[in-house]
Image 1: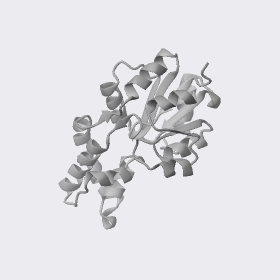
Image 2: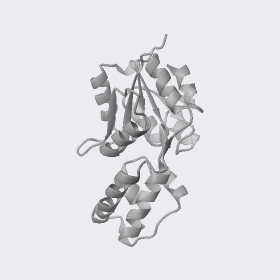
Image 3: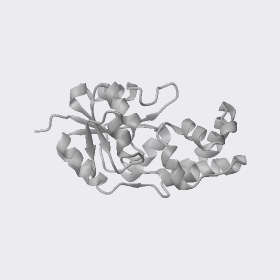
Image 4: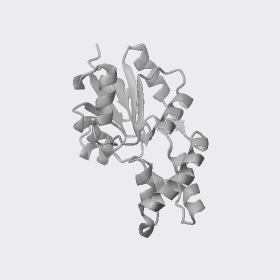
Length: 217
């Protein structure tokens, strides 16, 4: 019998490959502001820490001011809200994994540093029939991962204890989040970050394909 009652997933790089839409939207904002753009491949190193940090990474070093981050946001948000499902897609095996967890009576949730509106839209678009217990993204005044607050809030809403939880993500920030929340972690090797980043940040397990996660329950 599984010992876990709840699996919390990161979104970008874990459930969905979203990097091309993020790259397109950021390049749109950069171009609109008159700054140079980046090849899509560069964005694998830019994403995962919320969009303000994405903008800091994408902006020319001398332009990384709060004013310019706000300017970028004003172009990025309207564009991304419309185009965030253009080239994004679930990783192979993820829909089957989510359905299997649901069939086994294990609750599933999302904890993302992507802003709340986009997080909810992507989940509802790509997984319309999956009964997520909680979907949380970045919200004003709420700390981002690796702060454990998002995991703690999900646990509170699902009435689970740390030992009941498996946290699944693709980055060092995700592994730090799990450690800070005192929950068991799985680092996925199909995401945006290299395996050594996962192990160096304390991953309890590694998954090469989504089905591997079932063996850690």
